[in-house]
Image 1 (tube, rainbow, N blue to C red):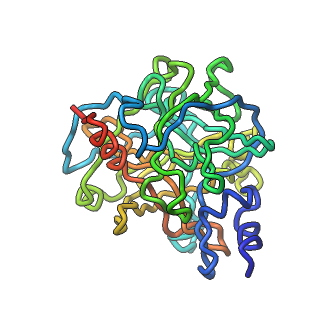
Image 2 (cartoon, rainbow, N blue to C red):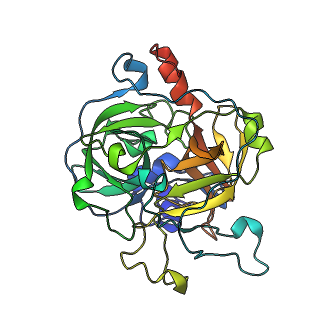
Length: 339
């Protein structure tokens, strides 16, 4: 089976170049797929980025106080009707528990869609979250093309996009700089433990849309708190009105409304530090926040990055995330620590 045919059958919306980051062609009947997808939205040029290893003193990121919890609160539920449910008798690992996230209130309003554009006109989308008034947290592969190892020609952040509509069209922001954990020269194969990025916007959107803090957790906390995490992301296949009639009310089509999976789990940590989770997602949800609730307040504890997708169902039995501890490590290396 050729790599090209594997990619096209798994996810035709993804370009071959980008999908090769996440494909392990020797896997049969499964293959890695980077959680990223194509779309068409104009953007303008992004500049002033650096690889984390070369970015000492380049960018400071305000950080919340350190919290060391042992038990997490139950996740709070944003507004949104349940649109997808497991069918009777369907295997648990094939169930899709995503529902539309249609809440315009904080903290959900801090999450938005990232649009990446290449000079040849190819465009893709990811997910990002405001962590300060003008900085978002996302994946490195949402900033850097893993094939070329270069920052995308232009990058745009669209806060709280629901059914293709922004609360205010003037709030579409350009991503003008930042730091990424890897440029994929050393490891193009997903998942990558350094697949994180902090990116600066040209507008202080956090003042209007709120911000979500981030906090690293010990593996024991993840394991001892099953079904207490929430993933939000702009998956390319969601909402699917053809498959689920209840979702036909979303007129903008797939990839224009975020999905949420409540009460999912972070189940393990790989030797390289990559986290394994069971939150449902597809391409476009890359960079999406995995939230844990500490003292009834949401914190980003991981960044969704990739899935191990079943070729028959298209649903991943095992998904992957970057631990925000990697961002903390970078901050320490440049002399900046959490308070």
